[in-house]
Image 1: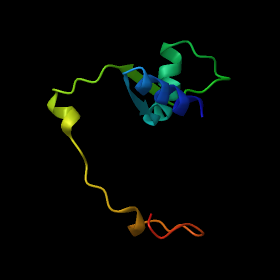
Image 2: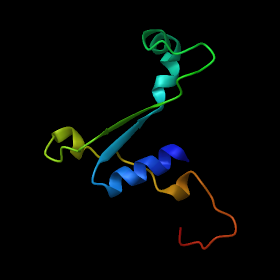
Image 3: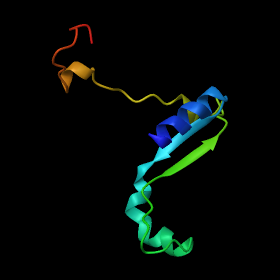
Length: 80
């Protein structure tokens, strides 16, 4: 909830965010470099900044299947 709220507040302030869960795979390596105690674990990272809307990479939009192809919702309107 904290990260979601942080990201929403950043967008409200005109900034962009990128959550990076893949850091969990490297918690040991990164922890050593940052002197994080063994009792703590790096789970994710978050990039914060201003989006460069002119950069070609920021125009990439991946194809996604419609939600009804992989999920069903019970007790809600069928308009989802």
